[in-house]
Image (cartoon, rainbow, N blue to C red; front, top):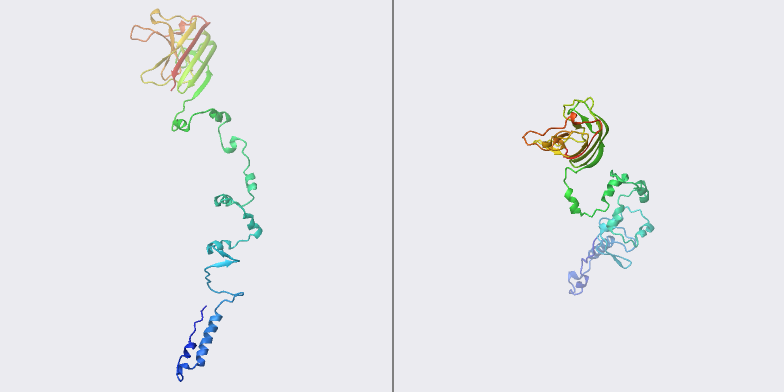
Length: 301
């Protein structure tokens, strides 16, 4: 596309003197001018229905009195759009932000249908929670702060709590041997962490068939005592009926648990010598209606 530029200055010829060869207008000069005009006209766009080829550069577009400020990149967003005017007009008045509209990015079907396909949450198991309702309800009423609760972060052992019953066995040996016939043999324990508290009730102890000179044991305690290298002994309290008293110099019998065992024996509480006090023997059970009640606490292994 070219612009027309005059090749011959015809007006200047009027100022030349008569007889000056330059004063003559030649046909070739007209030919050049008309050729330049034809070229310029032929390469200009018509005002009505022009057809452009190549790259067209338009500095400003004015449509109906409004200047278009969109960039080419912004206008090119429309490339491939198949939405109708009515569909595009649905955006008219939308106040959602770009971030909010992007929430539907990737949605491939009716949103309600997709939500319905996810099902409903009706129980904790729907959320893969394995805790029971009772376990979750432990949190009910907690007033501790996050910082206070975080004090248990990193604990590798959590103190346990349990309580149950067991059946104590009266015998004449640490294992095997002979056992007594007991009318009622009740045992109950409470365990908090490693500390165990035991109560035992033995009614109508019949030692028939047992070796009378052997030490008397109560076996099958619920937990084995802690193995202490200093030969720890745990001592409890005792009430008995139909049982011989210890030597006067040694005081009353007390139940004793040795470390690393799950049995107890009965020893006198006093001894003036360096040896251990006497222990309760099978022969010290004086009647078939003898009763023993005891309680003792010890540390489990």
